[in-house]
Image 1 (tube, rainbow, N blue to C red):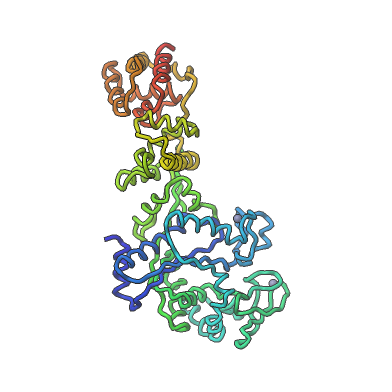
Image 2 (tube, protein in one colour):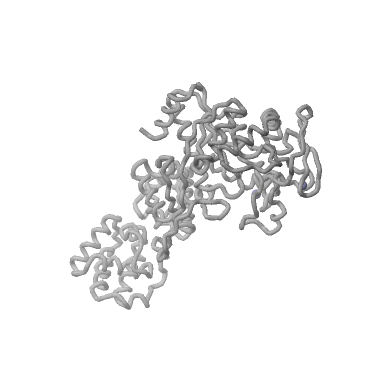
Length: 507
Ligand SMILES: [Zn+2]
Ligand SMILES: [Zn+2]
């Protein structure tokens, strides 16, 4: 049984609710990355499992757009120092293309979710506060401040400052949501009176004039949105951590049962360049060690992420290596689930396309020619089919440009690489001559025929096959290694190939 069904079953046995709300959420303070995506994927899997079991459930996503900018991250310009402490929804977009800082990072992620086919109800925290949905829970929190403080101190084991308030007013003058001290409040008028570090003394409305402190906010939103299930990073699940606090606040202050928790492990980014030490780090937006979801979706089709991420149980970490392991994963997917893309695109393995696009050098009509030459059936009059090929080829080109190790990259040499040829032995030259002979009279060979032919020629010339491979790569790519030789040779123009092998033999 898939872990999502095991969790769904446990929820159905343990919880009394007949209708479930699975909540996910992220603070859009920087690029939303593959590590963040894991939360959505887990929520989506459990949600689907519940639906499959006939349970009513919905999946929601809360973007913490009302959270303050914690510090000026390295990817932000110097002038953003002035925005530290302001809510992300109230800060201008650093790139100027969206209505706010929050939207700049949120929107590409929401677009990616659409690509991934994940449907959820989206909430923006600033919108929830501004709409007045938090008014009741704020009133409750302010009137029971002492109890709240006691719960937080008991669970977390740390002392709160005397001026602590469960409500953080948004200062009308400096725009910060982190600098004001609450001096009093009026339940009837739904106002909070504050003094800000900037010198301003003001009045903040319960309706959008500030937000609840994080641990209180979490518990309050469970009640407001009726959350019954929530996956979250394991850091929140530690004893005395925010979930433990939220659980007690929910029960004692809001008389609400905390959601069924699904703590999950991090996604680790594994980078391994050739001749470079393996580097494994937790994906982090603020430190820039991450791969944004919208970026990886330019290099791999969405079905690959939907295949890879839910395979690992939430309590196990995922090592995400966008280099060769990702290519191997695509291979595995195409072998076990099916070819990516409709029509002819689905018949060309992604790994093969990696070779073909490098020979075509971004020339689409050339690519089609190569595809046909390689033996794939292609209906060039069918525009939908060509579109699918173009799409898959774009993934291949983007993966090559962004994540491919040098060993996978090559450049077909249009000129004979004379200097490199000097290193070839007589046996290797002889092997090339025999290969050239195969092409006499306009003969063409399939990838498999080429593969067999290379072994045959190696045996005839009394050479090791790997030496023949090396000779082929040297005359064509000016390097001793390359993609599968059968694929490479079958995709090249036989006339060009014959000339090249002949020339190399003579040189
Ligand atoms: Zn923008
Ligand atoms: Zn201020």
